Length: 133
Image 1 (tube, rainbow, N blue to C red):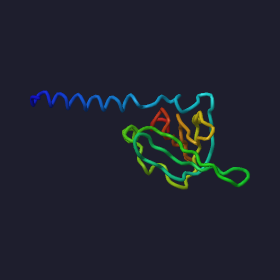
Image 2 (cartoon, rainbow, N blue to C red):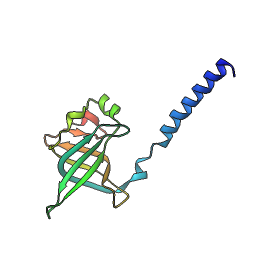
Image 3 (cartoon, rainbow, N blue to C red):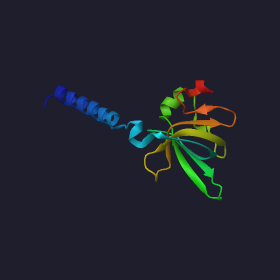
Image 4 (tube, helix red, strand yellow):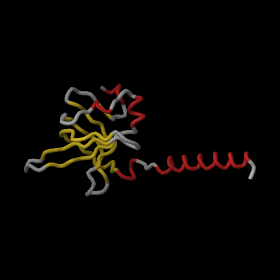
């Protein structure tokens, strides 16, 4: 195999590999049900700032004293960073209100297409981005 053929094969393999990751990304409706909107208020337990999505765990106290922890899916870190958001914009212990879509699975605590609104009215993850404050 010539040097140029080897380079061409390498470039093709890299492009195919990158394309398969893009194609593997799921549609929102693959996991979340647009007919199951949810809104709740709770306390941030953890912010997972990682690829491919940011997740914020929000604990909601129930009337019987138990707690539910929802895992709220946000956008990719790079996209949110370009909109001006930083990992520490949401703080553990902060009270927030979440609106989004429940997962299709009744056993899943994941929430998608979410907007997190802080006590002072800032909106995070929403399609309006930082401009939606």
